[in-house]
Image 1 (tube, rainbow, N blue to C red):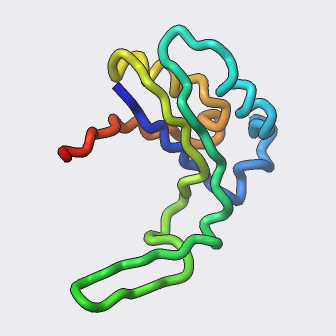
Image 2: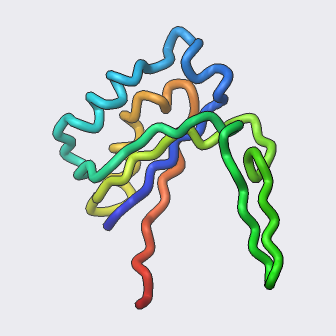
Image 3: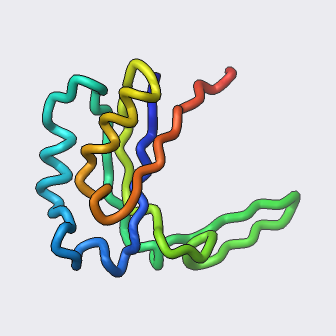
Length: 114
């Protein structure tokens, strides 16, 4: 089953804390063999300030600069993995370097019913 590991952190602290990971460490984690999951893809996101929120409602579309919600932690990146079950996905997520300064939300990916 596929899982999306969503990386949340306070953007202002993401790269400034002593335990903050470097980009090279995050890349290396995605490249290493892991007994719990197969790595599929990952990306870091630009600052939440660069986000644009689009809300289509009927014939109207509202476009807003910035994030959808004001929160202390922002979505800063993701890892897409394939794992046998949620426990294996969690074992993979525990090792994601950015978890040291934020948190990882593990979500199963739903197959589209098409």
